Length: 113
Image 1 (cartoon, rainbow, N blue to C red):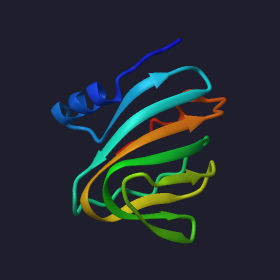
Image 2 (cartoon, rainbow, N blue to C red):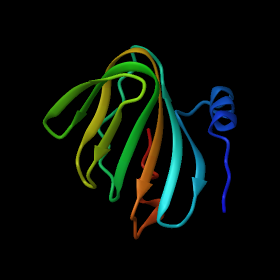
Image 3 (cartoon, rainbow, N blue to C red):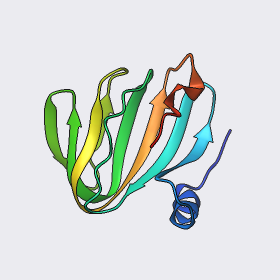
Image 4 (cartoon, helix red, strand yellow):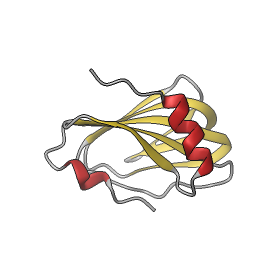
């Protein structure tokens, strides 16, 4: 069993300069906390594994392929591997729990800004 405190990682993220910090890495699954400031746009960033975003806090919009949706706390967004996606029109600081799953190349998602 692996136990991690997402809240502790979120506190660490506040002290760092990046937008993402890893919560845990268990081979075929990696979990991160992401934070993006209001007014910021998150670049399109396709990956080689499926992703699941859970919106913890904040509001904005997400584009997955050609689909656009408003997001708010409690929303879940699935992104199929290889599909371009981005968050934009962020109105309130956006905090997401990001799960990367089923990757044969665990480091392939390391292409961050």
